[in-house]
Image 1 (tube, one colour):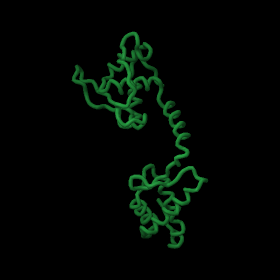
Image 2: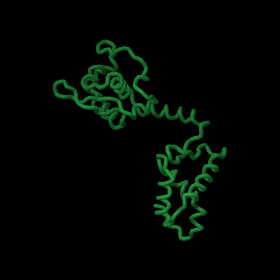
Image 3: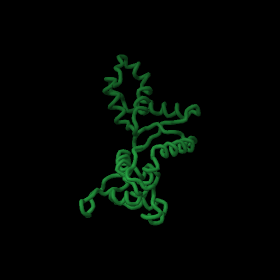
Image 4: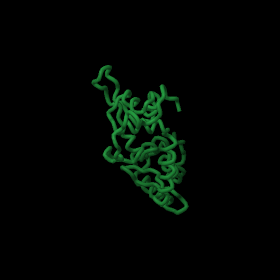
Length: 202
């Protein structure tokens, strides 16, 4: 919670700093309405919209300087710190490397099968991979890259797995039709993965 400032002059002098802290602390764009509500409550003073606009303008001007690699941008009706375009490529490479680290080979294999075969049941995934896939499916569910979409009409009513909206974000696609074209999965000599009775935790 914002600290109470007794002097009106004090908090007006520091208004841009309070707004800066609010924008920095949120992981989504924060609107002027939300900023005002936080300031009015935290500072126990009524802040005028004009004062907020002036402080935000001051901050935007500050971060336009070349000494900063990020800036404050208005997005979806709110304000958020964003990296400047000239640094996108470097950050993109870093994120690609990080994404590869987060998904093991087993998870990538399982995710690929779900993406191309969805909706698909666990036994079909295991038949294609040749290994038990309980662990990898659970990890993919935890990462919210796949989701349970219902139950199959086959005996036992097994769960059906599909990719999620987060899957689209993770791989930078807008529609499943954008996935690379692959030949049909082979379930005999050209299996994905190695034969094994169970899959070790990773």
